[in-house]
Length: 312
Image (cartoon, rainbow, N blue to C red; front, top):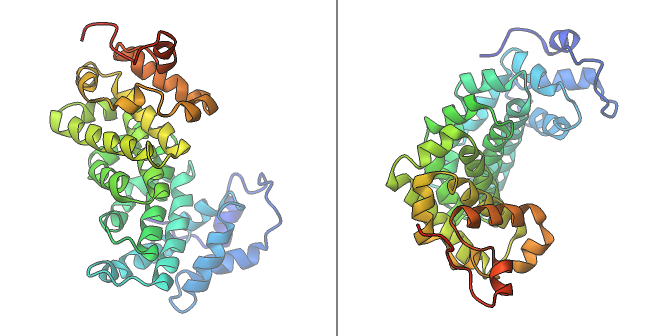
């Protein structure tokens, strides 16, 4: 999985060793923390300190991946929490510690040199038990959100290999459950992941392949729109509209959406948010045009609600 280099050897061999424009970092201290990850007695402090550096040291993911025993140590931290999630007994201290390990996994998943090997090792599968949890306490929510962050880092790059891997797993139903039951932030990240899957042609075809898959997605999106009409969130609305818009690019889904698209997306329920976000307004217009509806603004100018202008 990982190589057998020391952290300092890996740093010297890194192609971007001199390219970082980040604030000065004590490299000797940094390499010591990486080596401390393999020492259970020092690991907790190392996890905390390294997680603080993940956004300021561009080569940290490469050093983590290639240094001896590091990824195994991160996986040990993840697996050690399994007994605390069923039955649910996770404490804030346990959650904070494992989330520091997950933060380091996220930076590995984000880096172009380590993302492929990270995926090939099927490491994301070790996080799925966390996404299965439903307890609403803060430690569990933090655990789910940070786990979603790792998956979100993978899909950000729009690589087909990532989408193909995720489609071979249960990530879609897991995201849908979080979209229905999670906090606003977790819902937003889960919806972003679904959006990225839909934007891939293979992902769109997969979800629209059977009525069961499509109807599950459409049902959850519909519930979210209804909830947003009462508890608005501009960034969540953006991802939901983008999901609907992409679904409408599929002929079979297009036909079904004419029957189940929420009225709130056809009237002026979200007018204020749409006026403030041109991108979301654009994708809603694309959606409504695909379905043969007039956009809300045009319909209101005509003094009538948005209705189909073409036959289904």
